[in-house]
Amino acid sequence: MSIDWPAVHAEAEAILRDYLRIDTTNPPGNESAAARFLGGILEAEGIATEYAEPQPGRALVHARLRGDGSRRPLLLGNHTDVVPVEEEYWTVPAFAGEVRDGRIYGRGAIDMKGCGVMQLIAVLLAHRARLPLRRDLVFLAVPDEEAGSRWGMRWVIEQRPDLVDAEYALNEGSLPREVSGRRLFPIAVNEKFGSAIRLVAVGRPGHGSFVHEDNSMVRLARALVRLAEWDRGITFTPETQTYVARLAEAGLMPAAADAGALHATIRERRGLLPMFTNTLNVTMVRAGVKSNVLPARSEATLDCRLLPGESRETWRRAVEAVVDDAQIAVELANPDAPEPPPATPWNTELFAAIESSARSAFEDAVVVPSMTIGATDNRYLRAAGVIAYSFVPGIYSPEELASFHGNDEFITVENLRLGCELTYDIVRRMCT
Image 1 (cartoon, one colour):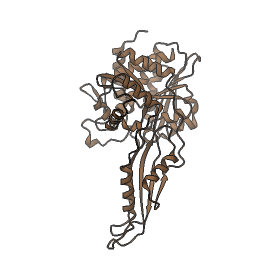
Image 2 (cartoon, helix red, strand yellow; image 1 turned 90 degrees about the vertical axis):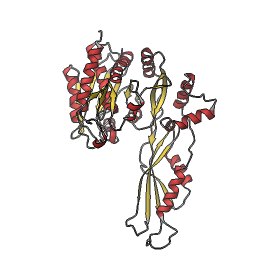
Image 3 (cartoon, helix red, strand yellow; image 1 turned 120 degrees about the vertical axis):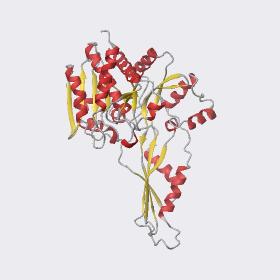
Image 4 (tube, one colour; image 1 turned 60 degrees about the vertical axis):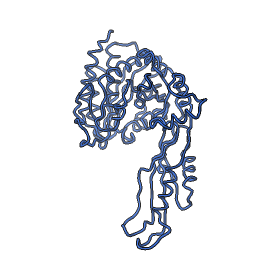
């Protein structure tokens, strides 16, 4: 079947604009309307569609195109919820799906309703073209990703694992961009994992008018400064070693042999450094009950994101050593959190399909295995044994990337179109 891409582009734009008008701010979510919207489009095409509601008003939608069973399924996963909006700082309506100067604005445009529409279009085209599928093609749009996935992908894994019984999955995370005139396609095959730390200092309370030498808040503050000044070094994982090697081969980064230049390049790039080090940021501090009373207890919570292969307990001990104060307890804030899944391979059929698709579109494409520095639903899929990659096709500008969770969030019409074409191409290469 010959695809009328201008018509498909117009269809995708119309769907996304309508989708952005559905307010799925989480909390509270209210994603059922979005699930029914996407499901209605699939049902109108005669595609088998199923809904499940982990919580009232928080539905997911699942659809499947059957293959011949000679290969295990490919899952296209996305989430329907979005982060809150501070409307007073937006210059366009956050839930109107407006198009201005080639940009489609709206909360969720780039995270990740735009990607969801790319995946939806790929399923619609595969169905319309009656592709001879070797494997099932599965579409799954879930709620609650922005608040930890308790009522989304985590619920699916625990209650409906049949919906994600797949060999491969594509989800959000890595967005291609232009670097020094070359088009860089990072494919996140792994991601960092959270290991929040709590510091608790206990001192002797007393009246604020006296001279005191044991103020729990001061003790805690000194520890936080030590942690803020802690140089945790540069660490290479298998995926970032390959990442550096391929970029060096393309002339976009110093080679590993030139360690000084390479480390300097990594450190000077804000978005790159977290891929090579454990991060630690103070996010909450609690102390005191009254302005003239010394606090008996002062507590701080640190948001920590660890590299794959790290141990939460080893990390806690490292933090404790830097704090170096026997009167401050260093605790794991979530001690019962599961350990992260093993690393995901990238010498796979899906990685090769994405690489081939990128290079067919752009001869100069540099395709590299990468790492997501934030959390995605892929962590649950990987733990369930699915080879899950984070990748959203397009060539995204710095302004576009900066709108991720930001004000005036947008995706360009051009990237929506390119994303639809590449997603379909990847599906075709994987499933036929």
